[in-house]
Image 1 (spheres, rainbow, N blue to C red):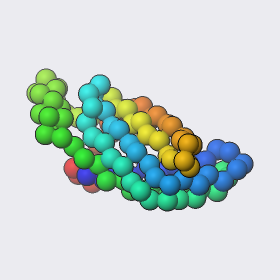
Image 2 (tube, helix red, strand yellow):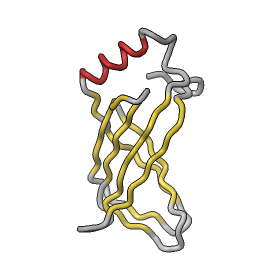
Image 3 (cartoon, rainbow, N blue to C red):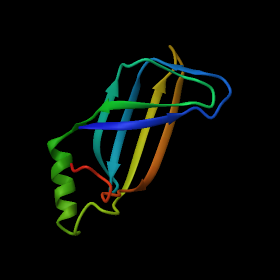
Image 4 (cartoon, helix red, strand yellow):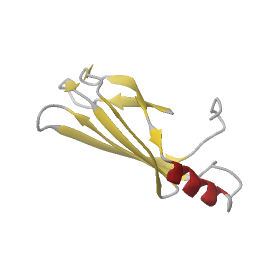
Length: 109
C-alpha cells in the first residue's frame, strides 16, 4: 500500500531532506511501516506531497482482523503516524500525527 503524506514547513528557512521513514499504528497496534530514499526540498512556509510505499505484515493483518471482529468497521478507529525526515548525516526532523480513521471519503482499500 502507499501513503500520501503532506509535509508543511512552518519555518522561514527551506528544508532539504534525503529520505524519510514512517510507522503507522491503528487501534494502538503496529500496522505498517515504510521508507523512501526520495530527496526533496520544501521552501520556507511551503508544503509538498510525498508518496511512501508501506509494508504490512501478515501478523499485523491478523491482529487488525481480530480487533475488527469486535467492532463493525475501521471507521472511527484511532491511528498514529510517526515519521522522520533525514536532513543530513546527523540531522533528523521527527513528526507525529494522531487522529481517527474516516473512511467516508476514501476511494476504497
